[in-house]
Image (cartoon, rainbow, N blue to C red; front, side, top):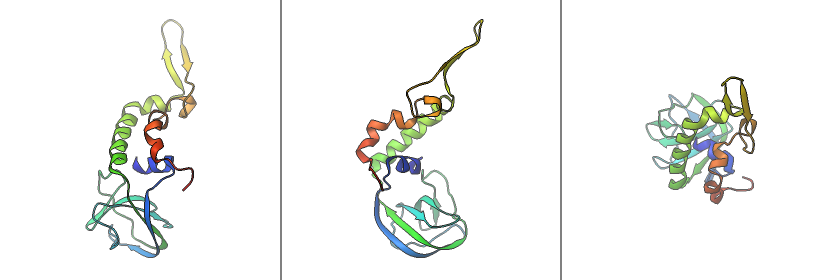
Length: 152
């Protein structure tokens, strides 16, 4: 979810970029310029593009919830050291919970349905989700705006 949020606000909080040849083997990559627990972004890889949390003994996904090993690969690309604010990380957990509780509604093109006597439905309008349903971007827009960039 954190990567989706960063994509949505056009801000990955890049501190520094490192171009070069990188190798991931057995789910681990050695990146001495990162601190344990720091997030980073891989770009230019065929198999491993995305946001991860760095740990010397393995990699975790962008939500830091489950071990996700990198696929074995050597590539020429860029690794960006990130400095994602803790308040955004906390907000991403709140958004993740909101999506889990409201995902079915957001993905439906209908606001409500009724089968009492005669079938009827109301089309959802006004949001940026499917069929105009309100999405997490709509709900959390004002809270995310402080980090939003025009381009990245």
